[in-house]
Image (cartoon, rainbow, N blue to C red; front, side, top):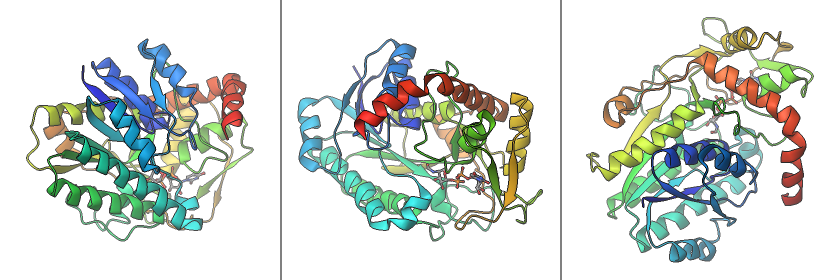
Length: 351
Ligand code: WQD
């Protein structure tokens, strides 16, 4: 059986990827210390797939504990590495926390890849590596600009570490640069569980719409874009998840030309913040309570993907529309209102 180790599998993208992997015939084990995620999300994964997921509650910054997982699972055929801290604002306040957590964990994993000759390694990267691009859409060849945050630097440095590691090992690696992952699985059994006040746009919209937040701010409407608000490439989390399965299939079929290849995962459509709000109001029927506030430091003005390479090489084709993204995000928020106690109980015990 094709066994895949998913780090950060209790997280937003990780949990959706586990579902897609299982639906495509993979056996999956998870490692997640639940410092930023809720283990109960795996109950949703199990409801969708019918499979119980084993989670090793281990901090992969601890090498010995991580090594022990590989000793217990000598048949790991691939690793998908999601586990990392990802809050841009927090990374600015606590850069060393981010460099230590995101890079030590990566290096520990790569040491295990080497030691146990794991053939395939897929890394969760981000469009944040492009910084503020001079030209859009960005391709994989668009030169990275200085990152806008320590979080962004950990993604840029992570890519470089894997690139150099791949040159010196037999492992075949893929870096997937996500644009803005949003939405929830159509079953509405799993979705995003932001911790505290959401920094990201879509959970801020849905929490405001459901009344969890009294009001939200649009961080600036004086940018040089078609309506003054920032422009992004929102992509459904299930489309992102399926790209990971396709990336593994691509490596298993030895279709890769290089030992470390990069792919953009975006729809190729740019949408502004105000357009996202208008679309949300249309699909939800809810008038959103927002005000225009000051710009947020570090925000990229406009970015969206050229996704031709992932389409051509991986055979990937985003299937969900912006309306699908926003309606599933809204349905998940409405479900959370009912299940909040269920998720909070477990989470409060753990943190
Ligand atoms: C999008 C736009 C905000 C909240 C970051 C990381 C990226 C990934 C996703 C981890 C911006 C505006 C937001 C709000 C707003 N992180 N906004 N009001 O910054 O594009 O990407 O998160 O995987 O790597 O860089 O996403 O959703 O925070 O912001 O106006 O309450 O929405 O100013 O223009 P971002 P975001």
